[in-house]
Length: 61
Image 1 (tube, rainbow, N blue to C red):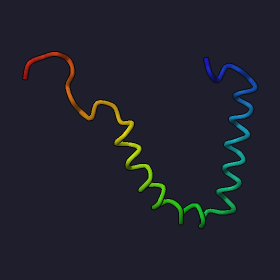
Image 2: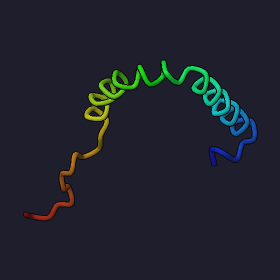
Image 3: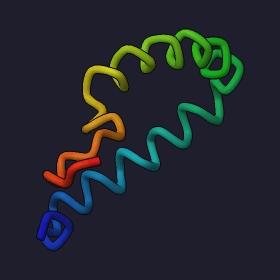
């Protein structure tokens, strides 16, 4: 499994801790970027979102 390797778990833990401290010090700047991040995520969600609710089971409607 992915998290069973100790070095990957250690690097991921350090990244989460670093992200916490950076966001704690720069929370106002992070919130200022949030509307733009949401606008950028919308096209990505439409691009990579799965089947968009279509039923591909082969049954007739």
